[in-house]
Image (cartoon, rainbow, N blue to C red; front, side, top):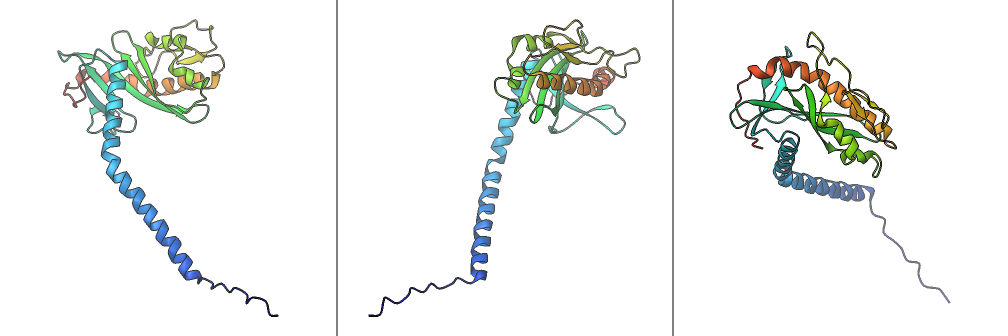
Length: 230
């Protein structure tokens, strides 16, 4: 007896498979772009609100803020919009300069850490600090956001300038936990040494860039609000 006839499968031409793959890829790309465009304004608005709250947290005396940057000559100028690492001058209700808020970033243990800190012109010190973005190890590196003794560093972290006003008089450095002896040192976190040292490096580089310019030019700027009421 003859067995059943073998089942024959029709082979799909390669060009049809390629066409299907390209079509699916194009559809997925279109969906991604559509979702991105549809949510871009909402994401931007949420980011702006988060930033405004962070600024208010580290510089609560500010009633209004002005976004500033540096021109090609290194002079402080008002800017429109919010750059990736914004810097703000804060003014009280009477228009008096209350301080500055500076965004900075640098490499931590696992990835970039982005922070916000406030500077007091009155006492030449960093007086507020907040982590904006971090992917450091939970339970270790993320202690920079919650560890009380570490956050106490920013009650008055010395950031005074040298005699000619061109750089910090003393570099901001992180020391071992419990070894802080100077007002420009950060009392580090045991078990999160790399992350806490990274914060010192980030603040030192940023403060050396911005504080000399802020001290030189901030009082000469007209306090026109950029709409970021605290």
